[in-house]
Length: 191
Image (cartoon, rainbow, N blue to C red):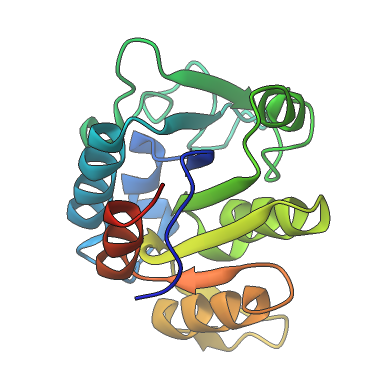
């Protein structure tokens, strides 16, 4: 177990909406994603720390995340509770076009913990920005998920490899990569 998490840590739950279940996305890794996220959210809420839900509302009329589509609502495991913040975004990075940075700074949140989808898209973009902005940033690897991805040469990369490489891209310079069990230990020992 690593260092305790401060009370000023905020949990960002990124794009956990019904859109991610659309078969057009293809095969994903981490079949335990929703259960892991629910466990994390439960412990986080019990600790009294802030939860911020980020909802993607795409401008692309063909997106599974379009505002008027069946994919826009939150999945049951990530349904916001009364009083929890919900920020809507239209691009992959949760800091762009939202009040996220202002909200975090005004509220004294110097640490962000990120969970959600898609690891190599919105999770990675948000984590990079958080790190660049000077926030202590954690990404919960087993509370994130991605899908198989075809590269520009046409090779199909398994979601497990895409996920692992995305987390490796973030590790160190941008974020600390943790698992739910480790994070729950840090939460329990936090100030």
